[in-house]
Structures are given as structure tokens and as C-alpha cells.
Image (cartoon, rainbow, N blue to C red; front, side):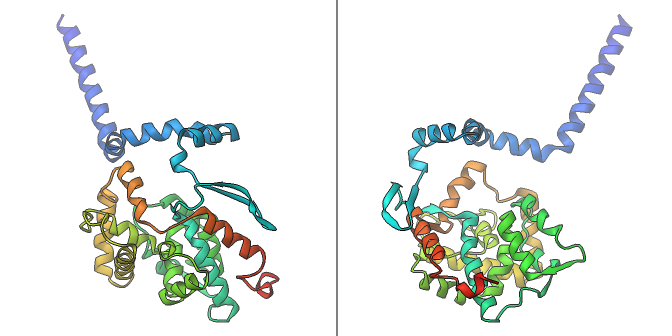
Length: 293
């Protein structure tokens, strides 16, 4: 009997030790899992719908409120498929398209040198822990010697949807130039590209009072996001403070709350974007001279 009790005690002790080690070493992962149980359950229901056109069609039928479609022949823009084409949608990394346009313009005018060597240290200022890190790691591989041509940084931004290099390019291009581009394109103010680091800081309740987000206009949100990103770039102490907070608690929101907060990010309609693509195709934005290079 004593041997059995001793064996049981050892077994339970070993089990408790292993459990403590597994949970302890991966506590943040388990914490994220439990805090976002509802969001992960919802997301898992939709994954299979991305595997086929039929699945995607079913998804659109089940959640029409999340979908906008604009598809037409450039030579006959009044014909095509249109569904909620005038409903603004969060742009996400699609806003990098506007940065590319301004980059092309400045290179074409000789204001930027695509072969200029850029140090990784300059770009890393905008890297926030736990925010799109996997995409950014692909950029880091480009910097074998600690530097890379500006053109490679831009390519990484586009190919990997790297938010960090997008923020670096945003400040290189200049706020006034980006705003002038958007005016030239006749895009709404709400589509103005903003530094991603600044936006993620602005929706972080550990860094800002986020209770007013529903009430402030986009112009105010943009102003505060740009100011935060600029401070992240110029103030090393602030940079360290922010990165420590993101390291400890990311953006202090659940996945569902983060999804809802993206509604404050730049937006555009599918009709506006499709029309923009048509203008690009017709060489109305980027000069044929640059395209032939």
C-alpha cells in the first residue's frame, strides 16, 4: 500500500512539474489562446471557405455585409459586376499602393535614388513586437550586410506586405507629398496612407485614451497616428518604452477588438480602387517613360 501511494505521489508530482513547465514556458501563448477563444473559433469556421471558388461563394452568400465587389471591362466600365461597390472598406496593406506611386514619381524626377543603401537600423525603428513580425523577418533576410538598396526595401514592402518598411518609406516620401498625391488622384481623405506603427499605437488602450475613437474624425485620427509614429522615429526613449509595452501585452486588445478597431484605419471603396487600376492601366498616373525602364 505504501509503495502504491509513493508511486502515485511521484507520478502526480512529475505530472504537475511537466504541466507547470509546459504552461510556464508558454504562458503568453496559452493566455492569448484563452483571451481570444471566440475570435479563433469564428475564424476557424471560415478557413475552409478560402480553399475553393465554391467555398468563397458560400462565404459571400452567408456574410454579404462583409463583401464588396467591383469587376468590369476597362473599355466598358458601365458593364460588369457591382456589389456594395460604394461601401468603404479598410485598406490594410493595400494602401502601400499609394506609397509605390509616390515612390515612382520621386524616382522618376530624380528626387530619390533607388540604389541608395539603407541601413536596417533606420527601418527597425518602426518595428513593433508582435505586429506582423513574420512578414518583417522576410525583409531582414534582404539585409545580409546590414544594408540594402532602397529599391529592395520597396520590393519587400510590396511582396511581403511589410508594415515596417512601409513606415520607413512613408517618412522618406514626406507627408506633404503623399497628401498631394492623394489630391491628384482625387481619392477621399479617408484613404490617406498612414504609418502603421502610429495607427497601432493609437488604438492601443495602454498608450492612448481610446474611448474617443468612435467620435473623432479621420483627420484627427490621422494627425495623432502620424505624430505618434514620428515620435517613435525620433525619440529613442519613447521608442524603447513603446516596444516594451508591445512586447509585454501587444496592443492590449483581443483579436475581435483589434478587428473592430481596424475600422478606424484608412478606407476606400472597391469602385474607387478599380477605377484607379483602370487609370494605371491606361498610363494616366505613372508615366510610360518610367514603366519602360
